Image (tube, rainbow, N blue to C red; front, side, top):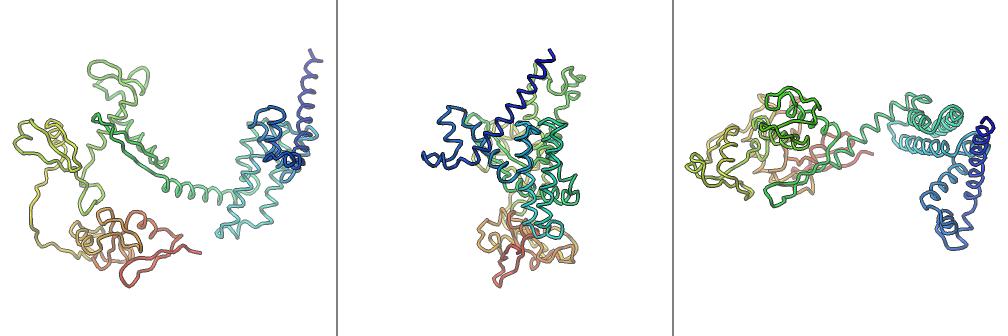
Length: 406
């Protein structure tokens, strides 16, 4: 048994060294592929050996890395000090670190902390450290070490890198945030959303408060935990269905007076219906978008909504509140909409109803909540005017022009 054990270990090391030798030849064989019209050595090898294309490309990437960027790793792989599986992990970790340091080096705010020489020094130390750790750790542990290597070698740079990474992720999240609705024609709408992670966490936490099994039909907690509940008839409700009902309850329970202004007033769902039909529970109501609701559903909504009368004409309202209020009033929002018509960022045509009122001189710097100190900006440009990466200036016609800081 001892002889077989030793043979297996020896053969594994020999196989790894043979693969390492093959990688060295692969790194120097671009001319072989070119001579037969192939894109690269991996393509040529796949064609000649009938092997797996993805594995050949993986080998080629490692071969190029060990021959050009990580020669210490390549040498350790050749001598058998590093196993092939470890080499893949170490090479990937070093490539990730190199990209991160290059990004930081190109960011002028990090220049006093990181220089080109310091970058190369960190990469050299990282390669040495990970190759040495290969004697004690397998691929999974090496991957974890590689992910945290910067905190070991350069903690100050790591802190800056983490800060930059978080800011980049937050900005990326804002760029890709989306919510779409698709009417399915059966009385339902498919809602798809991509939102920042913290927003999704907040939403699920809130919905789970609605779906707490201890609150289901007055029963005690179910033995299967929060993923099982029953309705009043004792029928099991899927957890996804409970979340859907909770989402509906959450929206209907929102206080409209605490919502952001939309076109000068809090968001309102307008239902057109004869008062007599509403009171008797017959007929149908119509939303402003054209959809219809049963009288019963309209009455249910009316239990948690204000009924606002629509009147013609207007009355005098104070338009300049000075320092007595921080937020623009609905009357001021209407006046701004009449004056500005649309977002006042140069070249932007987002209509006023989708815009937000912005203080030209911030209220926190003693700016008045007056029309002369207000301007309408769409959400995109409202974020830009508060983004320290951009400069802005007021043009003679009242528009706002933005430019990226250099």
